[in-house]
Length: 199
Image 1 (cartoon, helix red, strand yellow):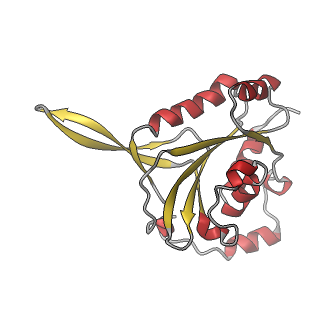
Image 2 (tube, rainbow, N blue to C red):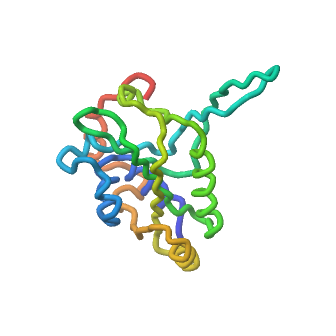
Image 3 (cartoon, helix red, strand yellow):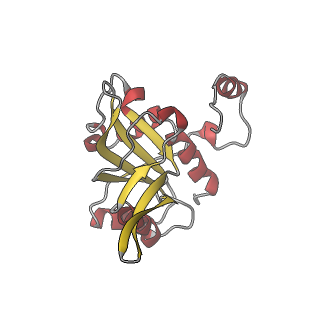
């Protein structure tokens, strides 16, 4: 089976939801143990699809150094930020999920992780959705990758991930997310969601 763009889109849409993201972590137990509270998952994890960060780099003008903020999109597909459900603050744990994209090879997938590492080696803060603006979003150093593979991708990618000691799970997209049209139940569910202005 060849990997199609719709497979990537379906997995990206699925892991944009915090509960689906937790279900993904259940397949790699060392990361599941990083979730602060399984009793309060909605308050313990923030899922950021196609995440943005504000990076501060040093500029120089007339021998005076100053910080220049720049907003960049990370090469990962989803960032999972762990939060203390009691104090409602972000912990040091940040998980970056990399979903296999059609026509990617091992160097492309690994390169996205390396570029993420380079970007987050600087001082940065996460750009949070409005309803999470109360959470302190400064980035910290505990960064963990998780790769999501799909049936039909080159076998050399799995061999490369194994060789690089990088964790991965194999997933199949939810069939309900690979179609072009919503069912009635899905449409009603989406209609019940109240969006804030600008979201």
